[in-house]
Length: 504
Image 1 (tube, helix red, strand yellow):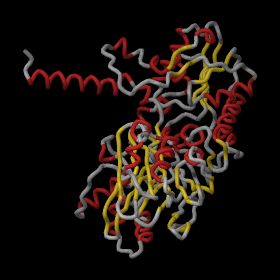
Image 2 (cartoon, helix red, strand yellow; image 1 turned 90 degrees about the vertical axis):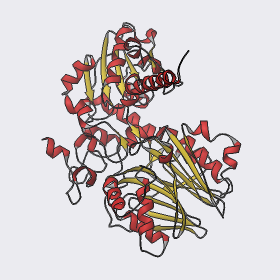
Image 3 (cartoon, one colour; image 1 turned 120 degrees about the vertical axis):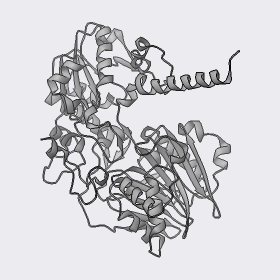
Image 4 (cartoon, one colour; image 1 turned 45 degrees about the vertical axis):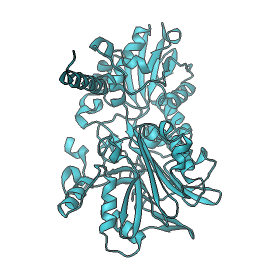
């Protein structure tokens, strides 16, 4: 007979097994870059919660761990926050009916700051002296931990570990009279890359960091304003794109309309270059540019810079597809789907032995042998992070009979970590930070390896090249040029961080 102690022990073993799967079997997930989240807000529309749920569906690529919606019905705020996908939690009528009101904001999350637990799921809500305030954001506060420690030392009580809660405390402690002034006072104390959407009982508020690192756009539906991370969230609900929120701009939407406030000294815009390379959905328009077309142009420039004789161009799906199409069109080499992706793989799958765990990549990708066997391949992917998944995909191509495998990457080598909202490994885990191109080639097991140059990437985005004196994009992943102070890493009062200078 099994004793209770034995049952608990068995459950602990099972939990340990799942944790091992998360750490080892799904290193394919750990070997991809993840955006932190997407935001959405709508003001004065009778279908506010339903529109927000649809908008979050369109932003699901920006975060798959959790989602939440907060609505306001004129009297009370209502909150629904869930672990998991938007469609699994916000597709049922009864859930939307628990979110009444004409105003709503929503958030879909991939955690970079704070664990994936329910109390960290956004939007966060607090009752302040001025009334209720719900807030969510995309990005990362690079002085969030420093501010948190200071606020706790002053007596603040935290419920979550998300850096979004810092904003709630700063707004609550501001001595300004108007709420918009309190919010701006809070923004003046933070640093990093962020796009905020907040809601009070009278206003919808949006804010973008002074460099415009993280994206935020304004839309309109039936005469009502919307704030969201990408234009695809407007497309799904039939809304009209109005404009981007400018870098350093705060927008206040209420019954009178929309007010634009620019409280900070003007600075040159430096949006995250990875929005164009990887994060934004291909059908989004970012800064007036069609993302799909840009990614094809990156592939075309890559072919011009690093051409090689081959029989077929094969994308690593899904993110490598547009660049591979551009590469094939520019080179005249046929494009084929040599790798088939399974879109229905869950995050958790027990793989009890090492030999089975090593086959984990095949759960997501399988070789199309008819296309590959006996051929010289050009594999095209958007980036290389740790390199573990890329190495397994190359082996899969070899096992399927590829005669040669040439790897082409549609971004420059990632040598430096991110602190602005991208879930990226520490520098010592980044393959390009540890190895030369030749060493990476040998590690991956390819016949040749090439990355697009930084200038080639800039040219694909319509620039003549990177302006070293005034860089047009946030591109520290490749250059080590961090555009802001990173207080949590180097301490308060330090000057702008340059890991490139430290490494050289």
